[in-house]
Length: 602
Image (cartoon, rainbow, N blue to C red; front, side, top):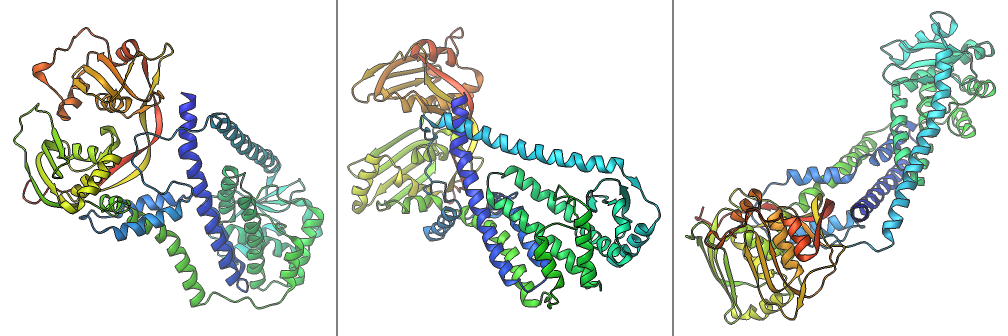
């Protein structure tokens, strides 16, 4: 069970994290390039760019891609060119995921040493995550102690100055001021109802102009809601503590945040020299805030801030062109993944999968499809004539055709119309003489290319493959060893309700039958190669019989099920020396995006 979990974790989790980090890094690089275009503008523009890059770590592009796929409207299959673009874009945005969309009923097994590496990596991440949280909790406790020991101030020169600046800064709700006996610098604590923690010992070292400059700085922190954005980035740092870029982004956010508040204070008419002196006095008598989400006045590189404050250069406001650039960048950041989702969900994949093959796509010279007159319980019949290239099917459902074409288990097929597994068709199709050699090669390679073309042409079938975590069974060898007789050559597999008798078939066929009867994907992990003879008998339950009925594999005239027989699980262990182990695993499923019945049939 642990091995299966680690295998699923490695095969699905690691590529997803790598893709997310790659995409987030790309956004951060784009934000960095944009900040170069705004280096002569106000710091708040650069701050919002860095904040957007930080928040990207919390919003995977896959969410927007999924939203885009849900917006894609179904339509008839189209030529392969558009979907090739869609696949190319999908490959670029997910470089750590295999680009070929192969529909397979199992996950490739991980190497033997990965089960030992995966828990180490998971433990290492957990240790770092908890370590970062623990460090912040210690710092938070320092601030909590200061707040608990602080006393609210209802009057005094600090309160009077604060109320005047609140009016100038457009603060609607008064900011409560608490006088603290600690040496922590003045800082804004809280998000919904922020309060100002003021060290009472510093007031006697400040003139009124210095006092008002510091208070104005803190008021602008409240107006900009800097504590909320800092808390969000702290979450990014906790989750992605191992990625140096997020810590660098944090430093850039603090630097631009403090510079933006400095610019706002100076714009209100504050004297540059007085403002710089006020910050230096706070640094002389107080300690810096231990947490980014408690906005103080001494953050960032103090030397650079002093240079910026004393530099009386003109900072440009955002003109129309710059605003258009920011708006376009934000729009593209959302529109691109949504567009990718629409393109990669575009119907026509059945055709494009065939077109991407190196073999020429077979073309049927004539196709006849009509509703079948087969009676209930009559099995499906399919035949391929190698002499004239004809394909014949009687009483076949679209679901059966898709399973045959894509070599996929019933339980790994999802979506489609209501009549997918109920409407039965009789099909007569003949290949043209010029493409018969290609069909022979496809039959030898077992890739079902000709049927995929027929489904796309006649049923307007559009499908795509995606990875999902679903309940599965692993078929493994029992501790006592297998009880199967290996046979040379492939013979036949006789199927009845509660009975599977083989005179020489590969394990894959047994796996497919088990999946049908259990209604859940079965993954072969026996490691058994070759063809085997066996006689498996058990008592099917009502749900299994219902699945067989839907699959047209019930044979009432020949069924003699022993009501006192063993269950399928017990029979496998006792009669074949095999076990079914349930768990959840990441597998590829085939999703039907669109399907139509041939014109005039339904």
